[in-house]
Amino acid sequence: MTATNLDGESDKSESSDLLVLVEATVPSAPGTPTIAISGNDVVAIWTAPSSDGGCEILEYTILGKSAAGSFENGPVVSAPTLTYTETITEEFRL
Picture: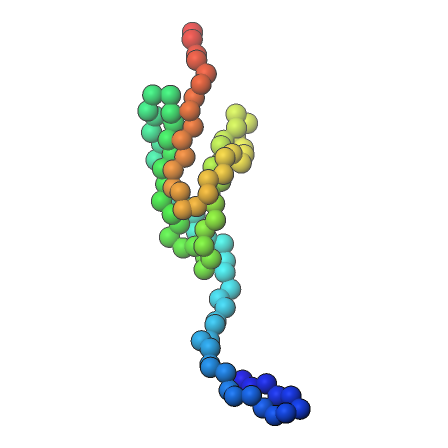
């Protein structure tokens, strides 16, 4: 590439690498979480999706199933973290 003005043409600039843009798609699903209970903590651990769809994974949303049977959005975990811990503070007695 060169630039030109009334006094003439510049030297050629260095060439740059060719940047090819790839259209991204949605990622595949994360791995099935493993749930563990430790004291008052419930810990979910999962694996990253096998495909990020061509774009970096930003976050994971934990989905909870309501008593009515529908899934609702819960906590959001920033990637690359692959664990979530919830501390249960309620006490139940019968």
